[in-house]
Amino acid sequence: MSYAEAIQFLYGLQLFGAHFGLERVQKLVALTGSPEKNLRFIHVAGTNGKGSTCAMLENIYRVAGLRVGLFTSPHLVSFRERIQINRQLIPQNEIVRLVAEIQPLLKQFPTDNHPTMFEVVTVMALKYFAEQKCDLVVWETGLGGRLDATNIVTPLVSVITNIAFDHTEWLGDTLAKIAAEKAGIIKPGVPVITAETNPEALNVIEKIALGKNARLKIIQERLAGKFDLSLLGKHQQLNAALAVATVEELRNMIPVRAEQIQNGLANVIWPGRLQVIQRSGQKILLDGAHNVAGAEMLRDALKMNFASIRTVFIFGALADKKWPDICRVLAPLAAKVITVPVASERTMAATKLSAAFYGANEKIEAVAASNFAEALSACKDEPFVVVTGSLYLVGEALEQLGCGPADDGERGLNDWKAAKTLR
Image (cartoon, rainbow, N blue to C red; front, side):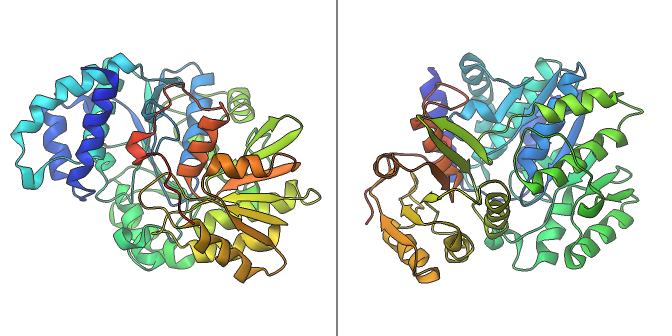
């Protein structure tokens, strides 16, 4: 089996959808020898900021000398981004081996209750981290928490970044319902730390933590402090406070010195989240603001860091996101926006996106392009370009700009394919 064939096999598992529940993944991980029992985890859930918080935690513990596994999703360019050890992407040959070892086990499942793609990838990650004898695994949920495949582990601490509206078709249409799903990662007697302060969501988290005798610590923005961070955005200060509180919670178990925390935060890298790329005298800011809360964070960061620069957006979004609301948040910030189709079958047409921007701000120049390359060429003389809307678009931008974390040139598991011309 080649690496490309292994990736296509995993991609083909999307046929089985995204069904929630732990029964399949529990059976599959047991068939592989229950590798999770030999690992220690920090389990991170939330609507926004999960990845950044995970990256901070990974960097702090790696600076402290640990061998740290990192499991995140989705990937931006290469599938290998999802499974890393000490920020080294899992090698292609290991992907091939793990797929080959798990394939026969899948025959023990009926077609109508077959493991999903994410469940199989979750078990692959557990197997790899255990084989590689990781000292600690920073373990990000996929979607939700309670019935998410990652929820088969018992962590040292549970972390909930925040609660906002996203994936409402799966998680519920109120903050309370979404909070209940995210807080499903809380385990009996395991401490939990959150940066959520909205009463509607926080009340649910508090109730679940109390019912499971899990000590709860709440990080408030006004008490977050000021960290020397490599990541832009005020919201990253809160994510940093959450990461530091997590490290402090585990300090008796995993000692970390103050200077190691400082160095870990000062040098953390997390691609595609307020990432600045310098290109021939031009600044390009990449940010996957794929929901309203993310768009508001991007808005605040632009006002704080780039208020004096003429701004041009390249924007693309998926049809199942709240793109009209995202457009309304971002429209007042730019002199011009070029909308593009996202490299996914779920893309929203660029013409509808440009109309939404113009409807929200009649002073803006809003045009639709056939694809990202065309949009990038159209603004080659602009001093500051913001690429945002969807992580799929950010991944495509990283790939085309030659700044991806790997040189595989594949984003197949994000159902990537060449963007259609949609006008």
